Length: 343
Image 1 (cartoon, rainbow, N blue to C red):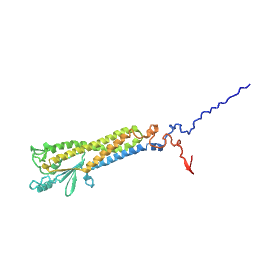
Image 2: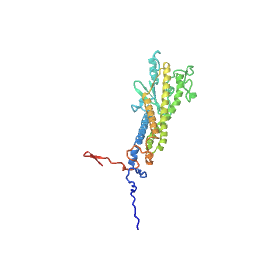
Image 3: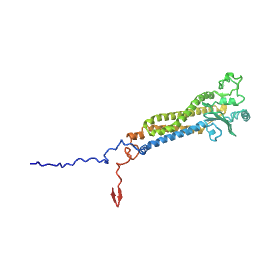
Image 4: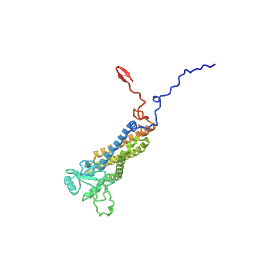
């Protein structure tokens, strides 16, 4: 006698659909270039912003570098650090002051002198700038040397107890008596500061311009990897540091020099004036370099790079799933027809 058979009433487990939304995305599938660009778009924008800020830095540093170097361009002569007005070096209280000033001008003394990064320019009030010295690396402004070279006779003889003169490298080979220029000792002391600070300022401005130019092309590379962003940020810091330090040295040095001359204006009757254009240009360059460095530092930890998207660490700012080339898992939008939804 055959035994009866029984069939289980339990349903077999449902196999997962290959298109189910619960299935994990295929992370092994290579991402398309369009997906990578979409996911790292925010990082690319900030990288290009950093490059643009360094471009501004280079432009304004070039204006600082070429300022006061040529007479051919109408703008370049107006860019200077300091301007000394010697048109009334003999005070009006002195008898025949107008005649003496005219004689000094005839002997070779100009009405004003402008100081740049590479050289100085000179001119007269009624005719403007008439000439500029030859550009020289590590240049520093020495008014005593300039006046001695242009003025045929000195103001006093050597050895005055209240006044001093700046010695030349070949001073002992010069004939005696040699004409010297009488200037207060405070101005001579300031000239030693100007000589040292000017050389540092020249080197730092040139270094800042070179590093900023290189940073223009380095900073866009930050979009590919955060590891590459760190050395680029260090290089950007070097650019910001050199540019800002040069601007600080120039500001402190020429402000001190201006105040020293104003303090003895009653004795020498020289009127100093700071160049607003030059100071504005160098501080705009410094501010742009600092802002570019700050943005570059932020890219070290913020915004997904293309390497982050490839490895799955970050999904970036794109709306499409970065682990698939097409949004196959997205539910299609429902369309309305005759007042009802049609899937």
